[in-house]
Image 1 (cartoon, rainbow, N blue to C red):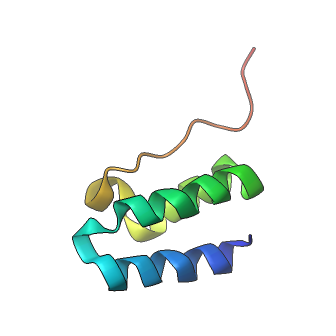
Image 2 (image 1 turned 60 degrees about the vertical axis):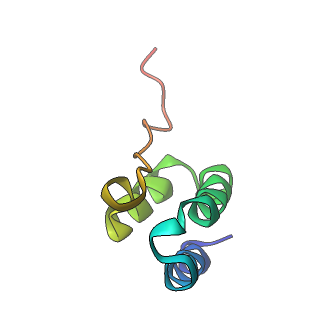
Length: 66
């Protein structure tokens, strides 16, 4: 998956399900996290205001500090 595909899938979920889109968005975000990492995940959270609208919080960094 790439970022453009993820954006389209999130937009489709929001259009189809409105305030009940969280489960569909969670599936997309799990794929984004797996394929693209925390930076892409967090970018989508910010772009779509997912934390406020769907309680999907940004991730910690991909890199550990230890």
